[in-house]
Length: 489
Image 1: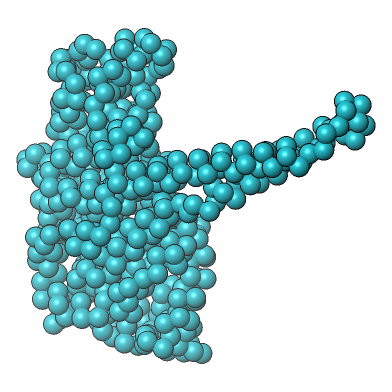
Image 2: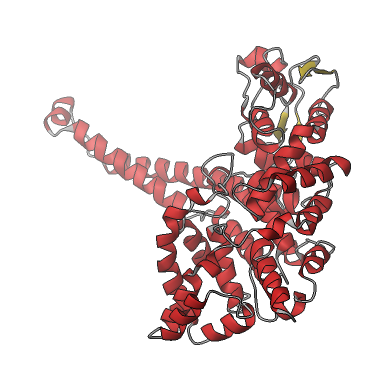
């Protein structure tokens, strides 16, 4: 294998994959581009996911636990009040005033509230264990992947169509599996429909009780329209900013999406948490979005708008730009973006073909590894380099939070940023993580082996020198993990 082939293999694993792991250079070295494309032909399904609940089941499980917590708290509070009344001495009005009845009532209230809290806390929150199981499955899939290109695409689209576990923890992992993973290598329109119609997205972007002013519920309840989901779909998920849509388009689209909600878990213990179209919330009549009139009834009106947004030329450019920015450069080559956008348009949004167009283009390979990896990619890369395949989800998610990228918890609907300026200030915190990780794996990982086998010695001379002069194996590993060769792609 020539040095140029080795260098391209290393770049492929860092830029497009999850980082090298033992044996990966030898496996893809003769044809890195072909290996990337071949990985897209393999199924993205996770067999272990069969043991995890669906998003609706997870939602019902948490809702049921919350209902039991509330009931137990009320029972404990009532019982505490009965006991206090039974134990209270009979006093005249003058005696009660003299002994400070108001103070006693305050103490009794505090005791009742404490009893209620203890009773509620006795029922554990099932949302956290579900979240950790999902995190473990997702991370181990990235560790086990031959290259990780397909997994990176799942991560990319999950961030593009992000929700937040801070709002809907129980559904966060299942949403990625059901809406994103199932469509990440299919057609963009199918991914768009799956993401926007998923109960987790409707919950996250406040569409559950959005109602048209002239809908039955809007008239009876005097509630209003919520524009969040319509605005984010246009600005973030499809067209992009400054692409010609107006505030009137946002309002019309928001009216189109009224009625997109979920089945309340308390009302239906079997189907609670699933998508449902509620006609009582839906604004009646046609709507005009981007100059086109939509007269469809029920949920088909929203789906028709989404299909047209998916096919809009601005969407092709927006998606191509974001993909190229994520994988290649903060300011991606215009020729690469246009080539990917053209493929998007020509194939009616075939995301697999867009990904193939990206890795087949020389433009995607010319730039040196200068793009800073996001924390999640970097942490997974360290684990892959040492051959780890099983993770502790508590430790992993804690590390992600420390590094400023808590799993499925972006601070806004635009997701985590993909530019260096947003992450460079946090590089110092990576040193603590690198040191702690190096200490834990020092007996199972040799930095010289990582340099020779996982990097095929395609690493800066000064890094080799620093690692060779390190005072301990732990220090050598930490230096290697903190090097630009390891942190950039």
